[in-house]
Amino acid sequence: MEQQTGPRIEPDPDDPAYRQVTFTYDGPDCDGVLALVHTVTDRDRHAGDLTPHLMKPTGRGRWEITYRLRADHRASYQVYPFHGAPPGTARADWMRVLDDARPDPHGGPLLPARDGRRPATVLSLPEAPAQPYAARRDGVPRGRTTARALDGRRVDVHLPAGWSADGPAAPYAVAVLLDGEMWGEVLSVGDTLDNLAADGALPPTVALLVHTMGPERAADLSCNPAFVDFLADRLLPWAAREFGATTDPAATVVAGQSAGGLTAAFAAYRRPERFGNALAQSGSFWWPDETEFDAGSEWLTRRFATEERRAARFYVEVGLQEWLLLAQSRHLRDVLTARGYDLEYREFNGGHDYACWRGGLADGLAHLLRDRRRPGPLTPPGDRPPRAPAPCGPASGRGR
Picture 1 (spheres, rainbow, N blue to C red):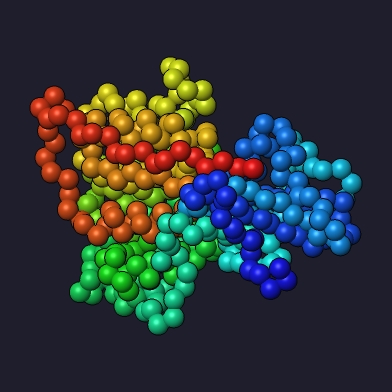
Picture 2 (picture 1 turned 120 degrees about the vertical axis):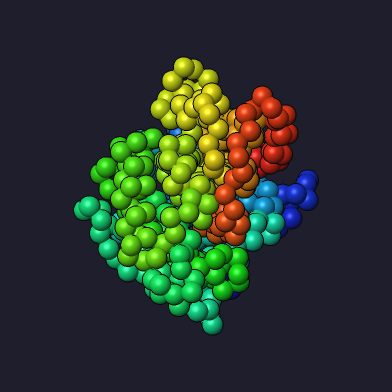
């Protein structure tokens, strides 16, 4: 055990599609240890009970907990040793937990964090989707990232290896990444983009990492026409002038996660003549109301269902553990499919987690930008039969 890396992974005796995953912590001076497995623990916190995630003492200061997880599960996780009573589930209690949680002391690949928090460890079970582009590789030609500002907003720009504003690769494909401060400064997405380009999975691409995690986030990323028009009318022309970025919507993608995923899809809805591709990961498609199937919920999906079809392509993915988002993402999938949109839809066995999103971002960019062709002329929906819905992923894995 002292030499292991990460948790102990063993076959499940009842089902070969699952694994028994045992996390351990050596803490003789603490009164208890809470396991924070991304989204798995969150589900019970939302229900007001963290008891299923308290590690059990096994003697000599060691704590242990075992989860039954499907063999394709991926999640970031931390441990939280505590003194006295276990932490509560109120928001203030949970913020203190997140501030003090720490990665697995037994090692494993790390997922960096921001705002002064410690990194998390990444659990990837044997059948989890491959992420060949996430980590920095030796011998790959490097692009460079520069910090700029536009209309008072920070935008980090990643330029591909060999970039020249008027070079033979210009005009460059362009990827607008929302929450750019996370993707750039924390997760080093430039390494991912360089890996994709080196493998020929992505054309030379200028990436615009737009900072959206400040106090205006809730306003910017809520189907806000003014924000999307800023991206279309100020950001993209600026990138074309300064960095040789294309003005072709077929080679332009906007990507986001959570509220950013909603905004990416909204950008293709509102300004398809500028954003011909939308990459939406774990999108907040319930917006503006969290209740299902009432008159206020799923505003954007309703627009796609009832209005003229846009000339845009979509890559949509969601985690099977995202109980607040899965049904709404499947509803959007069904609407886009029925309306004849070019859609790639995927479900991964994980949660609301950058450990999952960084692989999906690479796959989505490759899918959307590898083929720059603009969608063909629109055919009225009544003149063509709807395509069959994309197949759903299998049922969600269960926690302990």
